[in-house]
Amino acid sequence: MNHTLIWLVVLVGVLSVPGSAVFAASCSTWNWQSDGVYWRTCVNDDGSQQCYQATDESGSNAREVPC
Image (cartoon, rainbow, N blue to C red; front, side, top):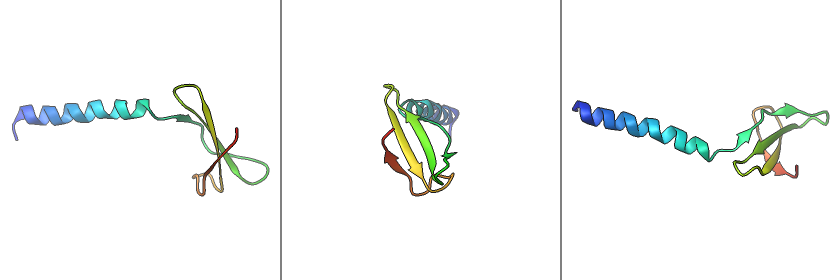
């Protein structure tokens, strides 16, 4: 493989990472609640929120719930 092709592959890889991160929501960590479930809030780029409940801190059985 020549150096130009290697640099092109590296450049495409580097540029693809930030582009995919721009569209991802910013989410909090899973927080334990007193009723035994875990809660997470996500904020989208447009400012809208989504809230989720799960059965453990890794997000198992997550489902969207009203915020």
